Length: 393
Ligand code: FE
Image 1 (cartoon, rainbow, N blue to C red):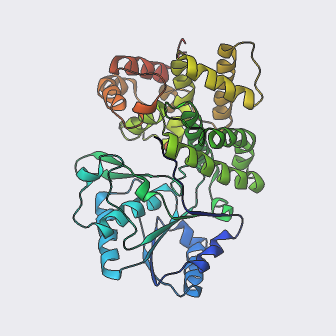
Image 2: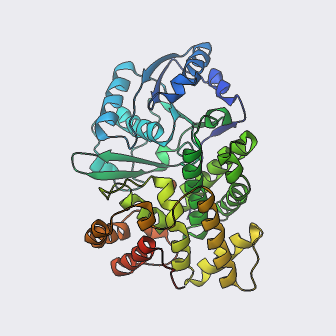
Image 3: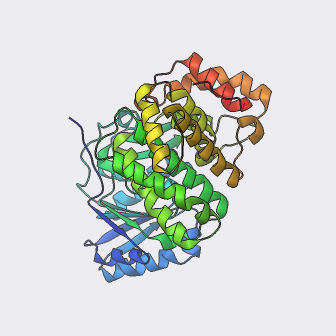
């Protein structure tokens, strides 16, 4: 038995933020990040729409990038005090992820992160509130996914939360919000979305329902991400929908080791923090070559290559063409092709890579990767990623 779960409603199009005025409820807590949504006027507009719906809003502001356990607890406490029947979160992945976790602790104050770490074991939500997510970046797709990542800075660990209970009820995908993204963020989040779609398409649990979403997302991203990066707002709009489709695919088909590697290297080096999307962009061509040893994966990568118009006489040639196309996109966005080029110190890399390789193998995304991997093989793959040497399929 498999399951395919999405938000009950998805509103999209320029100005769809206005849909907030059709929510039914009494009180909303609005969870926000660093302040850009407020500066651009979206928060005031959202509050006014909710007021039109007869909903009183209280703000929870300042969710940090990589939201902390403390922030989640503070938000949940505020919710217990104010008793909202809607949680509305506007912003990038971080405030929406934090709001999802606050929601769980609002409805179940006695639960713990330890309990929530078992995937798909959450208590039933929506006994107190429903959830509306409004993304301002085009990448994480947290507005349609069953995932959230919270960081415990005291213990130095990340808690990946996964359960369809935290798939939002309503997603508002309004491209006007994504127009505010600077170019670098546009590239990094866009390459994150491409990685979501590619990994979902070759995942061991890819489904007939996720395949078309993943493939269409790949086609649109291939056509529009460069133009979106260059400031074309029509392309930016297409990207905002494509990343959401990629999210629908990977929320149900899961991911692979590109994400395992990105998760465990993002904050691992003193000589450079590696943004999530940029890490995925760098690692993806290496992972494709590693995975293409698996026959089914190779065929699926070849299907992707054909779908985006690449040419090749054999499946292997098509896989190579796909990797070249991804490298070409990276070059366009000034994304380096190796960790060395990115500036991670060699001695630091070599001293930490054994531990990182082990952690990456243990990451939640490794299980659905099309080719199994051991810590030794993961280390070897990371060596290619560091020095920029080709992985031999
Ligand atoms: Fe991602």
